[in-house]
Length: 396
Image (cartoon, rainbow, N blue to C red):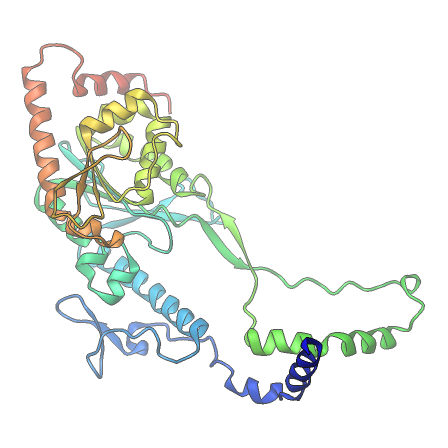
C-alpha cells in the first residue's frame, strides 16, 4: 500500500506543469536609488513616511515574495545609511576622515566622523561605538530608523547633547571592514579530446538531457533571479570591529588632547572595547574616565580579561541591559565585571536610546568624582600624571 501511494504521488507530481508554477516569478531585483524614488521621506518628527499615503514603511509589499521584500528592505536600508551620513555632515557638522590614514589610491578604505574639536578639545572626548551587522557610522539600529524614528535609531541625539555639554566627538564605523566586488565568471573548462571518446556535441546534448529539468527548476523557480557572486577585499588594519577600534585608538583617541575620554559602546561594541583593554590596558585606564555599555555582549572570561581589567570595569563602567525592570534598576550581574542596570526596555536595539539621559548623568558624576580625586591627591598616581608619563614613553 505504501509503495502504491508513492506511485500515485509521483504520477501526480509528474503531471504538474512547472511553467504554470513559474508564472509567479518574483519581480526584478532592481530598486530605487533615492528616498524620493522610493516615495518615502522623513517627517518633522524624524519618522519615515510614504509621501502619498503618509503611512509607515511596510515590509511585505508583495505577499509570498519574502526574498524580494527582503532585498527591497535592504535597498532602502542602504539609502538610509547615506541619509544618516548627510545628517552627520550637514546637521551635526561632523567631518569624514578616511582610514587607513595612509591609504593608497588602489586599496579599499573606510572612514570615521570627527567633530571640529575632536582632536583639540582639552577637556572631554566622547567616542561612540555601535554593535555589529549592517549598521554604519551614526546608527544604533537600522530597524529603528526605518520603523520608529531617527532619534531612537541614530547616534545624532548623543552627538548633539555631547556638543552642548562641551565634548569633542568621534563616531566610529566598526562594520565597514571590506570592499565587496563582483567575482569574475569562471571560464568553462574545455575537455581535451583524450578526456572522452564521445564527440563534444554528443556530450553536451547528453548533459543537457540529464540536467535541464533540474537546473531549470532550481535556477528559475526556486531562485528565479541568480545574484552575482562577490568577493570581499579587507580594509587594511580595519578588517574587523576589533581591528577598527584598535586602529582608531592608536591613531586618533590616543593622540587627542582631551584629558577625559568617555565611551558609549552598544552590543558588540562592548566586546570590542574589552578586547581593546586586553591589548591597551594601561592606555585605556590612563585616558578613559567612564564607559557606558548598552546591552553589551562582551564576556570577560571568554576574552581572558585580567583581574585588573575586571576591577577597572567595576569602578568605571556601567552596562544598561534589556530588562522589564524600570530604568536604572540594578540587575543581577552575570559575571564579576561592570554593574548592570535596566535600560527600561526589553528590546535590545532600544537600550541605547532609552538609557540616553542616564548615560550622560553617569558621565557627569564620573567626571566630578575624577576631578575631586585629582584635586585631593598629592601623589603622582593620578590619571593626569599617568597620562603625562605615558605620552613621553609612547612607542606606537
